[in-house]
Length: 372
Image (cartoon, rainbow, N blue to C red):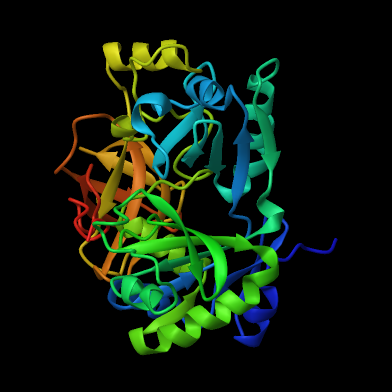
């Protein structure tokens, strides 16, 4: 069966990228090496396309009311025009249908940017929950090109392509603006999945190859490199950002996923409220944590056993090499209250290593770099 292509497919081919199948798309996995692209993002700029990223458009007089119903954050209180909010959709049991971002264009116009593998599920779920409401849910992803420009020199790069003020004062973290970039009308969002200063661009699909060329041409002076899903996965691991399908799913709650900061538990009338209240009041039996190993010599696999005091207490959900930190990194659901303790992780081949549990990001735990 033929796979689908993002707007940048021919650019991937021109650059000699290794391609892989992601939910039916030919996605760029790596252009040079994962380490090279990871380190370029930490020191200069990494330029990413995420195979099916784009807006699910929600419009109408009841758009905000619908989002208040389906999101665990308080959209009415926390979002004004030009704001972005990280949140989750939950089912009645408090399980995560997806973690995503919500953009407010106006009181009657919002975007949801879902995890690519969950976009169609999110679209269907939100439409179902909005039945009878004056809110219109449209999947507009195929009409947009998306490009993520991440790294400490991303502002310098983007400033050569737009006259818009994109300084932190004018466009702080988790805000967006409409701007002309490389002569193309675009939405420029101060967001990303790297843990660095960064921007996400959305423009009409017809301009995709022009924008790609302009960004990488201007980026040559700032160490910019195209980067694939391999680097995106390893760089998110250093920040301990959860990945849907591995670290979170519809049986894990955002509280268990260590995302309590992104839940307004006491908000009225949202899906999953009763279940999240019970978890909060009764306490969590498990929590998504990080496990840090001393060097790159041991990187476990998903499903590997995690033991504490010689007793298995969990399994690895995802792992990767922290190329900047030079350490093996993993995540796992473990009993609450074990931050700072040593655990032993045992792989399927019998090899094992001792790691240290952390509840905070491995890299830049206070998030100073994303707010630069």
